[in-house]
Length: 402
Image 1 (tube, rainbow, N blue to C red):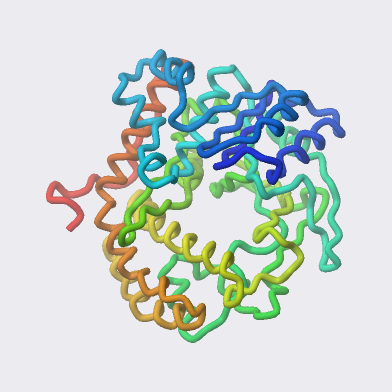
Image 2: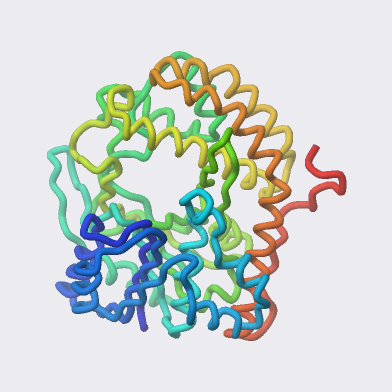
């Protein structure tokens, strides 16, 4: 199988964990046929030169496409369809790019270069597993482990979670239960309500003991057979305004996982918890009250989840308006307690944020359909057959969401 490794990032520099994965492949006798980096802000030439000495590199800058854009148009997209699909107008206006734009560009490049499998990793994960409380880690055969399962003819996606600190730092305050339910993160409560931080750390194990079917895709530890993209939708996420600021929604891999489950496209959680240096200074216990960078990260994560939840609940069907109203009520009651605990008044804006996200639902649904349309034209040209359909839930009412 011809394999591509894909990384999405704002900056290409030696702060990335990328070289560790390339050396890991070499140590275990694995061939990476292409490295695809999609970036948006800048790159260091000496680092790029070092990468090119190791692997065939495709370096693609968001909104600076040239030949890449021509390839997309050659798949049957008009100039307008192409721009809606791959361009990120928020890069020039606000300096941000939806996560899905990066990932879909990488997917397209892998398809255009006739790869068989694409691996996605994040810039802060590593090809080793945290095994115990003493901080012991062991390197693993990252690519070989995923490929072992992908070699099965009926398996199309492999993924797993991470070892290391949980994405939400330890915290506890009055009404935290309602706060987390308002963010649709109540399942995290047993993990985060521990001021020592011990329960906020996940440990992995060797041997892939608990391999199971899943519809939860994690974009930083993910491998996809590209033949599956004939039947899967692309990644999708968006942006929305919170006050004067434009923020990113999260969960760009959620839609793909849901659709795989609906279409019975076999995806496996391979119980392969690679190490995630979540806050950049492991093993120090993250302190959200004292460390501004951790506070910032959690604040923008909250906004990202709120933006994701409105769309996610819509595509799952059911009464998405009722869910929104309940979550807004919870956030209105609990965000003052969160703001007081974190000593940060920004958290008071969360009820306004969920209002804005819900008012933007119609636009976001339209963006999703345009994304699926553009990707469908590409896959139809490459694979033939019918493009993936975009519909999940019932259409929005003619008068809009209100």
